[in-house]
Image (cartoon, rainbow, N blue to C red; front, top):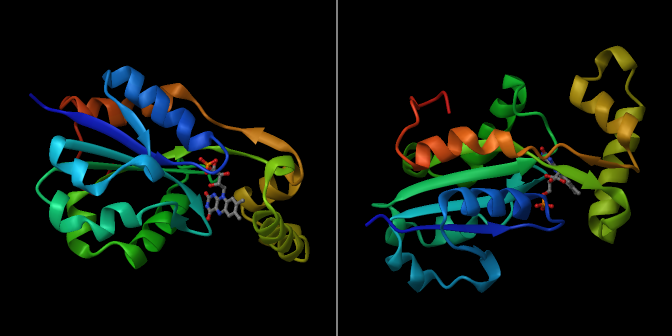
Length: 189
Ligand SMILES: Cc1cc2nc3c(=O)[nH]c(=O)nc-3n(C[C@H](O)[C@H](O)[C@H](O)COP(=O)(O)O)c2cc1C
């Protein structure tokens, strides 16, 4: 029988919400990355890993990259959760470029990758994250408005506020894929 697990790392709860929706829909266990032991990969055929995007990196991705020999023959699904809109192909290629820095070509080939949209609550950010976002906002505010991408404009408009784009419906392609019903071609997922 196909055993599936959802593992996630979430700093402010957005990725966790998606992990929860995915695990409930697939009726499988979910666990926070910090509580997962790599030896337990052996118990699963399908591993779904989700992490928030932070300056292009995926939170906790080392769990997969450092244990790749153990998991390479499994069905691995990776989802990212970020503020940028994944419906915009430019944002997806930006995420893909960042992924290339941490995943080998073999990993990129094997992992089935999905991008989900999270949110941000500035009042909850830790000091480091708050200063990173302040620096970004300051840098963007110096640009002329016509040079700003839609994402950048949105960031400036919502800077300091709470914004939540999580949407349960957007997990469907991942669910279809996990259940083997997805019509997913390489490069289009
Ligand atoms: C310091 C910082 C850097 C971020 N960098 C990115 C990024 O590169 N791309 C993106 O789409 N979102 C970025 N975000 C937004 C987060 O990915 C978003 O808040 C996400 O929902 C966080 O999920 P989590 O709460 O599960 O960790 C960043 C947020 C912070 C605070």
